[in-house]
Length: 115
Length: 115
Image (tube, rainbow over all chains, first blue to last red; front, side):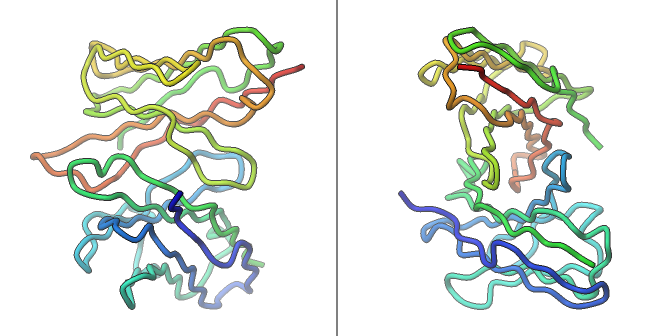
């Protein structure tokens, strides 16, 4: 069964450093998303992306965050200057089309630890 | 923003028992979804509900979309040890006929099943 793949599974970084989290969405999917989950808390929406541009973003997704689809298969989340409070599990998700875009398929996540 | 209140926060049950959890919202959603998250994994979609009053089953799972569009419940019948995990409700509100995949998640219900 097709799945969303995320790398790395764990990322440790120093505060102030840039990190790039990588995702390979399901191949025929057109909509891509990033969510995050701080330990013990609920999953929170960060950003949605379609047709090479951001469709919607949350208040969390400030100027330190950016997303990119550099090629036909990868979807990345960049945090320019990490803060301690950026420590969380980051989930990439994708959906197939507008009509069914509520059916998000999530990856296994990247656990980001900012020290 | 929209808030979902999910209850209970945790449940400890014996194998074979039935389980019920619910979500309420201060505002309406067009779509309600229920996800399960296993440790170290991303959320996996269990059931999606699209119409007020809709009752949908998926094996031993049954979920309903409340008439007011502000609530939903999930029932698990005859629980088994592999039902262990965190169950999240999520709501989606389409605005103006468009939807960008933004899901609002509840806080989760941690389910423990004793053999």
